[in-house]
Length: 113
Length: 111
Image (cartoon, rainbow over all chains, first blue to last red):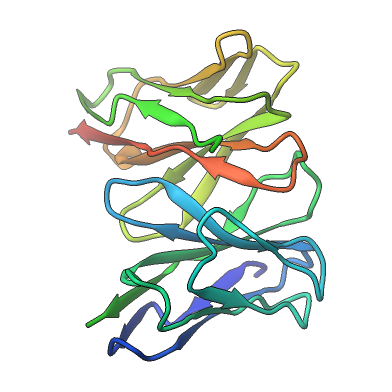
């Protein structure tokens, strides 16, 4: 089955530690996205990538970093510089054309204490 | 920011009734999409309407788009308990490279 896999589903970290969230897709999609979702708020775009080895900052990129070394993978690192990292993180992909819907993974809930 | 706003924030209806939720956005778009999210899960795409379309249907879903008012509505007819979820609209920047989501409408359908 084609889809997007995010792992792990739940992640706990101590403050001051960097943590990397995994996102893998086997849909052969060119574009991939990372969103953050907080309670009562919509999704906010952290980073997106249109093609391999290229990515762009979204609205809330500060404190996050990404890489796109392979088409299938778009890992997100939450660094210690991110002031409020506890959130639900969603990865998505699309074929890349502007009229294409996004396909989402089931998210990773990160809790930092 | 081009983020949309859904209205109402929360909606509670009886099974069998229709549910209408609205989305307003700020700048010109190529298309508008509606998504559904069950609690603690990822979003699932429901329907896409292009900027040159005014209405689109998919099963029990009906979406309208008024680009002059920068607004869209999602109608779910004959609602079921399984329709209970949050519903989000998403718009693309005119470049088509980014998607901006609204704050969502939480729909509860009471059996």
